Image (cartoon, rainbow, N blue to C red; front, top):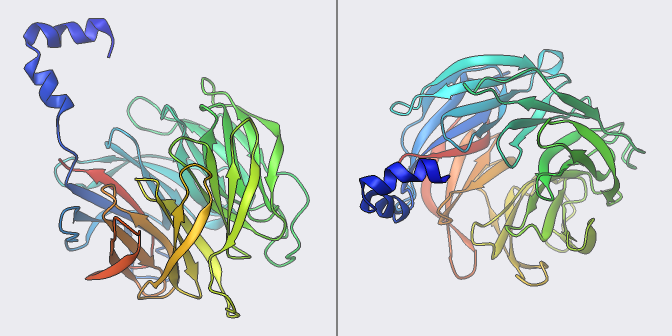
Amino acid sequence: MSLPRLLPVLLAGALPLLLAVARPAPRTYRAYVGNYTHKTESKGIYSFRFDSDTGKMSALELAGESSDPSWVVVDPSGRHLYAANESGKASSVSAYSIDAASGRLTLLNRQPAAGEDPCHLSFDAQARFLLSANYSTGNVVVYPLLADGRLGEPVASARDEGPAGPDRKRQDGPHAHWVAVAEGNRSLLVADLGLDRVLVYRFDPAKGTLAKAEPAVAKAGSGPRHAAFSADGRFLYLAGELDSTVTVFSAEGGGFRAVQTTSMLPPGFTGRNDAAEIELHPGGKFLYASNRGRDSIAVFAVDGKLGTLTAVAETPTGGQEPRHFAVDPSGKFLLAENQNSNTIVEFRIDPATGKLSPTGETLRVPSPICIAFVPLE
C-alpha cells in the first residue's frame, strides 16, 4: 500500500489495520464447476458452498448458463470468472461478473478463442492478462483484462512449433494443453501434448506479447498435459498423459533440468490409462496426480530440498475418469471429479502422510472437469 493510501488509515487509528492483518483464513468458499454441456444434462457453470472445517458441500446450483465451459478460473479479486468454451470451430472465452451475495454469474462479454478447443486458462502474475491454451489448433492466446472485468481483443497468439511425438494418433501435431507464466512473469510456459515439449516463450508483462525462447523442456513419448510449480518456483512437476508419469524439473540456475521421472501407476499395471491432473498440496509436502482408466489418485511425498518424489499411496476415486481434482485452499480435503460418473467425491487429507480417506461426501454434477474456489469470509 502506498503512503498516500496508507495515511487515511493511520489517521483513523491503527486498530482497524491491525484487525485486517490479523483476519483469520476463510472457512467457507463458493466452488464453481466447469463441465461439458454437449450430450449431457448440464446447462452451464454450476456452484456449491464448501465448508473447509467440516468438508460439507451444499446442494448444487446453476450459476450461469454457458456452452461447454470446460475450464473456469476466478481472478484474484474474486469478482470475475472466466470460462473456456470448448466448442470446436465455435470456441470462445467468456468473462462473467460474480454476484457476491448469490454467486450468480452475469455475462460481461465473450471473445473468439482465436483457435479451436481452449482447454486451460490462467492469469499472468499481475492478473493483467488471461492466458488460454487451444488444444486442437496448438496455439496459446493472450487477452488483456479490462478495468471492468471484460476481455479485450487478443494481443498475442503463438502456435507451438517442433517435431511431433511418436504416437501418430495422439501426437499428429501441436496440442497445447496447459499454460502458465514463470521466471518472475518474464516467461510463458506451454505444455504441448502433441510435441512432447513444454515450450518456453518470452513474455512481455507490460504488453502481453510473446516471442519464442529456447530451450524447450522435452521428454519423448510422455505427452505433457498439466504441470505444477513449487511455491518457491525452484521445481516444475509435469504430468505425462501418454506414459502416466510425473517428471520433476529443477528450475534453478536458468532453464529446466530433469531430475526424476516416476510412474503414477503400480508395478505391473497393463490396462488403459491416461494421466490427467497434477497439483501440489498448499503446504508443499505432498503432490497428487490423477489416473483415468485406473481411476485413482496417486499420492507422493515431496523432498523439500531436492524436489524429488516418493510414492506414498494410491486411492480409488470412487468413480470413472477423474479428469480433474482440486485440493481445497485449507489443504484439508481433496475433491475428485469423476467426469463419466457425474460425481465429485470428497477425501480427507492426512496432514502427516498426505494419504486420502473418503469422507462419504459426494455431490452429483453433470460431467465435472474443473473446480475454482472463491472465499466467502
